[in-house]
Image (cartoon, rainbow, N blue to C red; front, side, top):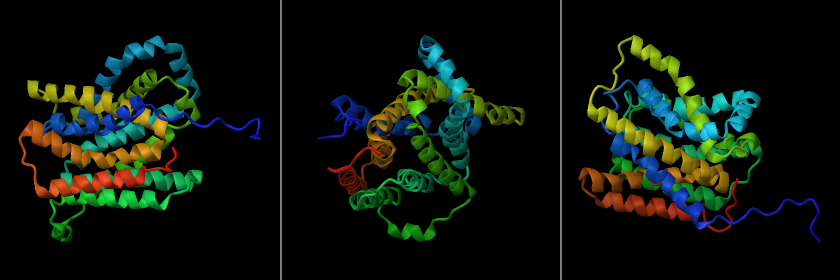
Length: 309
């Protein structure tokens, strides 16, 4: 007979949960379409500030509707609220835009996809989570697929990769995103309704980004001054911010941070498809090989026996 106080088994994910799970990397990858060329046209922390201030403004009605719960959360868990803003919107926002002015997109893609590995390692270190061999194998296969795409099938390129302070900035962002993903599972965060929670996090990000953005403005940092700049920012706000982070937070809530983090491997293949469809880029054989490896790795890492963690 089962123990009287045994916890009920978690409900099986619904089709809607799986839909949001796979939409998360789609919306994150939309940053390619809306964000291409914005680096160098607008100062990095100013870009991040406008991104999250715009997101906070759009979602504010949801915060206001649940203002009592939101105020209670901010008052009781101010530290968690601000740390989430620093990790998810500050370091993974302005810090990444800054790092991209110093490193290449190829280096950044390879390094940032390690965030899913850091999620699992941090859960192992901090929470005693067991790591399945098939999970590690799947992640290795998926990462190999990412490498094929980024290196364009030319492994000799590895001999010529050069790392600089921007690469270490991307590595810091990968670790920050892993910590952000784990912190989303805090009981106080889990207890908040999803939309108001996202609005609060956008507000937190706006607050922590204000000082560095203000410094940029005062020291001559570039501001958006064309219709194209504002259109790209709007796309980033609606798709790469609101839609992407909402879907990812839902994935963390339902599947756990480790499995949600695996969606990062889908971003390079999806970025390729979007570039072909929207930007007219050519689809190459190494793209196909990389996509097959990424999808195979995902199936291996998230196959039967995988439990949310």
